[in-house]
Image (tube, rainbow, N blue to C red; front, side):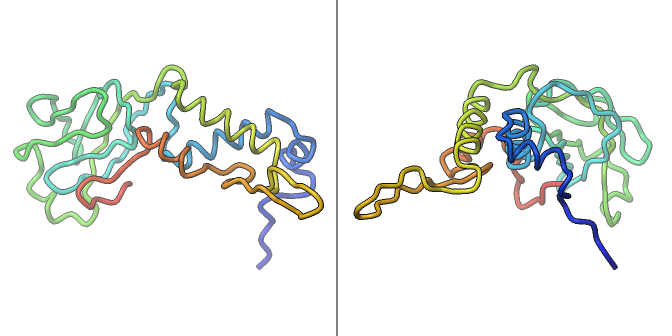
Length: 190
């Protein structure tokens, strides 16, 4: 079985990377930040009928750290009411089902879930996220494939950066931590 390569010679991103095109690098850096954080961050989007895993004690993780509205929640086709059947507080990326609203079969289901419609994401990219993106962009464009930041002659002194190309440093990851999806109480992030 022959599998196509992930990047072909005629790939426009490869041509942009080789040419040092800022738009190509910016797209790659944004993708890396979103991958690390586990969600899109910005802009605000509405999600309709997302199937979310229903965890222990009725905890439902929505896959966001900034939810601005929950418009519909249902379990096994039954529409639930906020305040009566579940609790959610803005901007939390999770909600908790009240025990009486869970179907009796829920505890025995192999993959219990809820369907949730919600709005999430920041209207604009937060300034601290932009700062990380700009830093990584500058490094990626300056050193797309090398971590050497300075080379001297005579004694061959090299200064190396802790990241190369489109990579987040440990300090940048720490700064993005408040936007990163986390698991609760051992629950695996969906």
